[in-house]
Each structure stands twice: as C-alpha cells, then as structure tokens.
Length: 63
Image 1 (cartoon, rainbow, N blue to C red):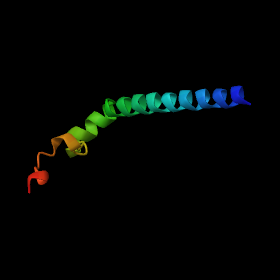
Image 2 (tube, rainbow, N blue to C red):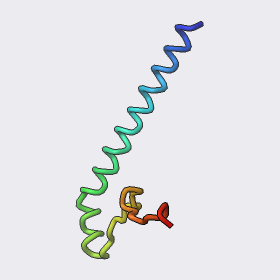
Image 3 (cartoon, helix red, strand yellow):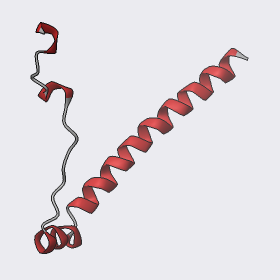
C-alpha cells in the first residue's frame, strides 16, 4: 500500500513539473512568434506583468 502511494505521489509531482515546463515553453514560443511580434508592433500591445510585492516600498508599519 505504501509503495503504491509513493508511486502516485512521484507521478503527480513529475506531471506537475512537466506541465509547468510545457506551459512556459508554449508561452515563450507564442510570444516570440512572427505573428505576436506583428501584433505588438501594429497595435502597440504591451505585456504588463503584475507588480511584485518587492516593488512595494510603502512603510505602513511606521504609521
């Protein structure tokens, strides 16, 4: 029973890692494609990344 459970956990972790690798590769491939470059140039589409919590310089703890 324990071996089956560990085997399932290793499979799940492996599939999760594979999912993130494929998702990153597809996103990078689409963003660097000729069509994406044309759309960015033609329509001025800019990717906005969500702000990082490290970018927040507020000192709320001093108030």
